[in-house]
Amino acid sequence: MELISEVLLPFAPARGSAWAIRQVLREAERIYYGPATVRVELAQLEGQLEAEEITGEEFGRREDELLDRLEIGLRGGAGTGEGTAR
Image 1 (cartoon, rainbow, N blue to C red):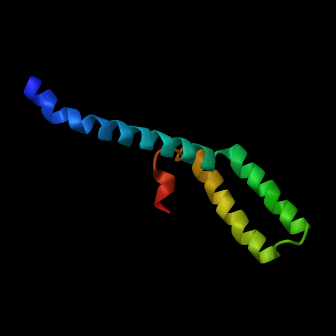
Image 2 (image 1 turned 90 degrees about the vertical axis):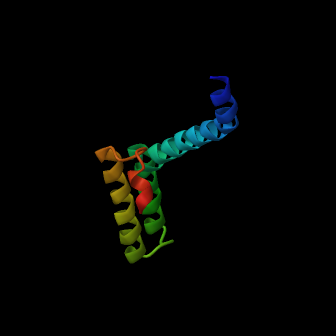
Image 3 (image 1 turned 120 degrees about the horizontal axis):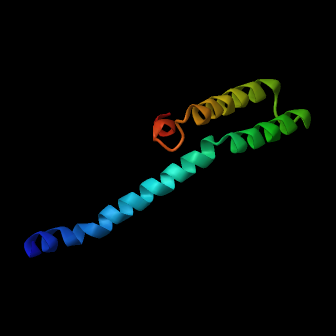
């Protein structure tokens, strides 16, 4: 048992770091695809259109992207790695 511990112990920090990185990525995806976040961004986008900061074409393209994100979030793909394959 001691031999196994000596061989595996140096890899423990790497495994712990990988786990922490996965947790951070899941949380970032959960926020990115979250309905509240997408709705705020949609409202900001609409404000940009009304202020004539963007064109109707740009608005349509970005709105489609946001609605795709919202669909992924509502479908439950956020935080599962599904959203990162784009």
